Image (cartoon, rainbow, N blue to C red; front, top):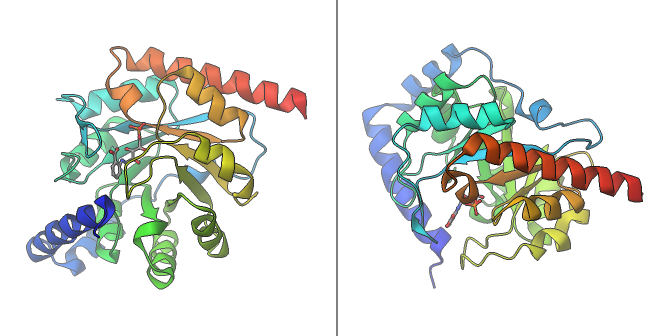
Length: 275
Ligand SMILES: O=C(O)c1ccccc1NCC(=O)[C@H](O)[C@H](O)COP(=O)(O)O
């Protein structure tokens, strides 16, 4: 039986075919090559150093398959600028159209509004999307292990690095973490939302955190309701947390990000004191 993720990817491929007809691959590749160098998202997320501070990846998310409409977001650039002011390290922009009501125009607007790395959050299945992400100023792309076989995952990760970008390599199981680790993924996320059933189970991060490669940035994704969930993930060793709904539905995104940073820092201090 087709899962939610399978259905999303069918739509992603159809939209992709339309874009390829409009803008041929050679044109997108040239536009990507003409961009100034990508910002170093790995460093921005604390890569290569012991975790002493929790980094927030703050998402621009209008709608989702699990919740439907979340927020109006008439000005994604203004929202992203508020996230940056609150202390976010990376902005995630959903660009998938059918299920998330996102667009490359959102990515363009956010890119122009902030000075920190930007993640093109989409269901990447083809090299074209990586060049396209770079052409629109993204510094990292999302690679969902469950959606890619090993050869494709390797190819997309290599292309990402060739373009000077990073990838957030997303996992949900032990086996997926091992597949990401073998390929030398440098930023590895555990999405506690099962993309096949849409169940959210924060304890998935507790179960998998120790299996994440020690040299990679460990990202906890989804399911944050408030500072207590941030503290939970940080206490388990997350170096960064990706938050969507809890930010876009809050009236004061600057303060919300600040609160999350504070909760994360306190949990990390507690974790360090206990070891
Ligand atoms: O959010 C969904 O319903 C969803 C469904 C199917 C595939 C992906 C989905 N979301 C993408 C994400 O992983 C989240 O946007 C991101 O981690 C933030 O999650 P949250 O903080 O729970 O909004």
